[in-house]
Image 1 (spheres, rainbow, N blue to C red):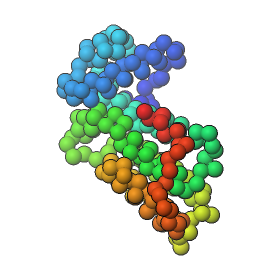
Image 2 (image 1 turned 180 degrees about the horizontal axis):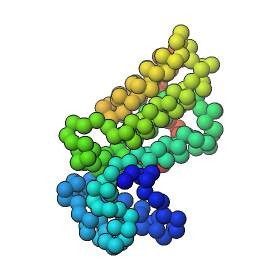
Image 3 (image 1 turned 90 degrees about the vertical axis):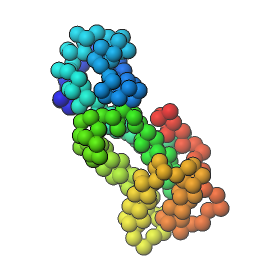
Length: 219
């Protein structure tokens, strides 16, 4: 069963029960691994019952498949919150390229940490050691890349590069690749270099992240 195949409860009480079961399962898998996580432990932590669990899932394997997709659906919901509407007290359209690049760098790093331990354990249990990302993960990452490109290309008037599409692609791929591998100071330097790559400007300081409070939704 996938996250989309599971019939979402209509009653708020039932939805809360499913949310508690999901949260408890992810916490336990992160702490104890898939093998060390039992249905009884899940429902105990969720404050639910075995009957409630089996009303929603056929068994543990069914739950694992659901969680593997639900993690990325949840991440996409967060991404939507972060990239639609306004960023803090200013509209997205009012944000300059340095703020967008710095904001994306922060968000990419946060995305890499979402349920990381449970995510890795689920991937190994469902697809084996060394297996690639799930289809849900690939869909999500493609969406993130597409939206990131759009956010930067919307500022094409400020991009001073002979091939704007290439400059934007290089920027997005660099941020994605370095999301977890660089400390904050080095990431700030990378962001400054990417801004120069896009605009040709040479700022005296790394891009400021002042006012980009919307990224804090991951906290």
